Amino acid sequence: MKRLFLIRHAKSSWEYPDFDDFDRPLNKRGKKDAPAMAGRLSALKIRPELIVASPAKRAKKTAMQMAKGTGYNKKDIRYYDGLYMGPLTYHLNLIENQFKDVDTLFLVGHNYTITELAEYLSGTYLENVPTCGVVAIEYDGKNGFQGKAGRGKLLFFDFPKNRS
Image (spheres, rainbow, N blue to C red):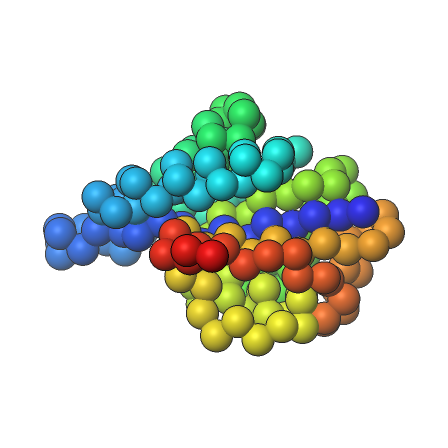
């Protein structure tokens, strides 16, 4: 059984218009939402075996909060340049390669790719994964989704403003 948690970075700040997009930090809400969402995952007893993330500042900070809140060593987070603005195929290949070694993977990245990945892999229309949203997808067997659309089972879709 393989479980994938697609996590969109928390809300970022636009306070400094001179900052490059890559360097935008989390804003006040993002700094609150990331630990809260990590807490929800922890309450469900979800522990990643590996966290991979975009190296953009807002994604790094979100990944670190996810690690802290779920008991994962933040020094073990792996950053991949291709998770920042890389194509869907890059993300799919990275996920598939990681599933060779782990069963529970957190991927922290950016929209629109997080939404596209979630829809592609689960076969479920989600419209938009909001900032700090988490989409959990499960696969039967040992090899993940094997590059095929719609093979994953959507376990849940949660986000900070979800009150259910």
